[in-house]
Structures are given as structure tokens and as C-alpha cells.
Image (cartoon, rainbow over all chains, first blue to last red; front, side, top):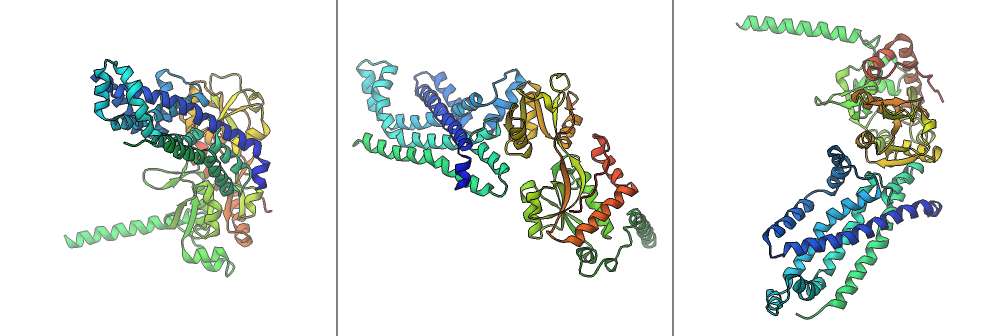
Length: 216
Length: 286
């Protein structure tokens, strides 16, 4: 236990970076995912195709390869992203937004088609019917899967450890190297620190789910 | 037809025998070793008796222990392993090579998976609590790799405020953080991942053991190792803890091959192709 108190400042800085990565990428991924989901149900075929292509591409690429592409391959084509935090945010956002979009799309599909038809019938535009009629109903059903996506994102931030970001896992590796023979204890502690925000996120999901539940 | 075939076969067999005889004579006195030459019950006697030895080495370390497409490891560590085996009267073909990555080395010795480890294995006090070390047979050290065109960094004194790429959770990273707090450490997952950021000037230098950097410099004309090495990493031969007879015997072998030129020969045909030939380090009989 002393091991963790003695190294509290180091662990805290790693924890903070993981938290920041999760929060910033999470918010950006929600926004981008929402836009992608809207495109996916848009009345124009090319828009739907663009969204589908993006989602399938990102959903089926391992996150490590997204990082590799951005950090090591993109520079060969003249795109040089800054090393570290913001490139990690970019990769995590691009990747996670595909999953957000799919979760939202499933919610949108769960809203009866009659709702959309009724909305259009009273003269609402596509945007208005999505915003005022469909999404408010869709969001209720997608809260649990969305929280799932965010929990996955929190753990996925560990991939950034291999790409110039010193978050929890990279911090754990440093401590493991500095204190020989304690690597297992340290990694165990790191795993527990992830629970500090993944468990409350799960609890929040349960509460929100109850709150927004409605009879169909 | 049958007699002709038999004759060819006999000729072939004779040639093989002759070759075999030559090979064992080349062992530098290792050819006609028998178990009886060693003290009874010693590890050397047991290995010589068995006629085989299991040696742990790296399979992914250029110049020291690297397995090619044919599955045979090559490098300076491998050559040192072969010399020790030949001193026990064990032919090259009877050596069993086992991959020992850094994190499993102590365990591999403790549970007897390998007899000895020659795997860029730095001797240090925490490791001495779990295994015994013969050697060192080479002293590596942390150094810097930069672009040839870089004139700012001539050595470790110039790295304050510079971005230095290394591997997350490695000894070089720890050394930089502790002793060069003014340098900005940029940790990646592997040293090879540092090459592109270096070329794109996103980092100023790569830092780790000189032998690894020399491998990169040899493969890339635009890169150069800069300055003297600023740590000492004595590479030792790991063996079972407190097997003092075996350790002393390996140390004797090392001193012998320093003298008779076999150490230099092993170096020159492996790591010596890209690194200068150093003086053999003094064996540490702690």
C-alpha cells in the first residue's frame, strides 16, 4: 500500500491524463457520432453512403492501427500531427464516433416509422423531425449502450501509452521499471484505478435508464 | 548400378566424417572434451555427459541474438553461447536455443528451462539476488541517435530542453527521467516507432543502448550515433544462483577466449560489422 502512497503524485498525473483523454475524446466522439447518425438516416443517398463507409471503416480497424496510421504513416504523406495528447484525442475520437453512431442509429431505428411520417406530415423539416421527435425518443433507449461505448473508450485510452502519451498504463510501466519486483502489484493498482471511473459510469447508466424509462 | 550407388554413399559418408573431424578440431581444444575432465557432480560434468545444452538468448535483437527466416539465431550472444558449448564438448548442432525475452529471464533459470542465458543480460544487484552472473563479456551503454544533419546534439550534455524518444517503461527511460530531468522524454511502444518521428523532426534524438542504436545507424544512412555512452550496461551470462563452480569455469573460459582471439573473432563477424571492436572487459568474480 505504501508503494501507492509514495508514488501518489506520479500516479495522479497519469490518472489525470487518462481522465482528460476520456472526457475530451468522449465529448467529441458523441458530437461526431451524432452527426454521423444523422447522416446515416438522411434522405439523400450519398450522405448515407459517406456515413456508412466511415463507420464501417473505423469500426473494423483495430484502434492500434488508427494510432499507427496517424502517428507513423500520415507523416509520410506530409501530414505531421503534434505528438502526444491531441493526436491521441483525434484517434480516439475518430474511432469511438463510429460506435456512438451505430448506438444512436439503433435507437433511431427503434422509434416507430409512424413517428417520422407523422412529423413530416405536419410539415416539420428533416432536421426538425429528427431533433424534436425522433432523437428525444431514441436517446432514451441508447443511454445504456452509449455508456458502454464510453467505458470502452476509457479503457481504450491505454493504447495511447505506446504513442508518446504518459497516461495510467505508461505511468505504471515507469513505476514497474523503477521499483523492481513489484510490477504485478503496480499493474493491479493501475487496473483498480480504471475502475474509479468505469464503475460510477456504469451506475450512472443504470440510474439514467430508470429515470428515462417509459412504457411502450 | 547398385554397387555404384553404394560407392557414392560410402564416399559421402567418408567426406562427412572428415568434415566432422575438421569441425571438432576447429573448436579450439573443445573437440575432445569428456565428462571425466570435470569435477564429479559439477554442472559442467552433467552437461558434458548429456552432450546437449539449452541456451536462452534473444530472438529479436539485431547483432546479438536475431533469428532469421531459417529459424537459426545469429549474433554475438549466440557466438559466445557456441564457444561455451564447445568447451563442454557439445557440438553446435546439439545446442538447444530457447527464446528468453527480458521479463522471463530470471524465471527461466530458476525453473531450469535453460542452462545458461546469453541475452544482452545486464548484470545488476537486484538480478544478482535471483541468478548468478559470469562475465561481463561486453559492456554496452546508453547513447544517442540523431539525424546526421543535426548539429545541436553532440552528446548527452546537449539534451536539456530537447525531445528524446525512447521506449515506455524501459531502463533508458528511467535513467533519462532520473538523471536528465531537463530533457523531454517522448515514450513510444518500440524503438523502431521512434524512427519516423525523428525523421519528421518531431523528436530530436532517440536514446537507448548503443548496440541497438548502432543497428539503426547501420541500416539508415541519414542517422548517426552521437557522443560517448553515458551509462554502463555490463552484459553477463546468467546461470543458476550460487552454482559457483560453473560460474568460475565460465569466467575461465571467457578469459581464455579474450587471450586466444576467439572473442575478437566472434565480435568481428557479428556486432563488429557495425561497431568498433572494444577491449574485452575484465571478468567480475564477485
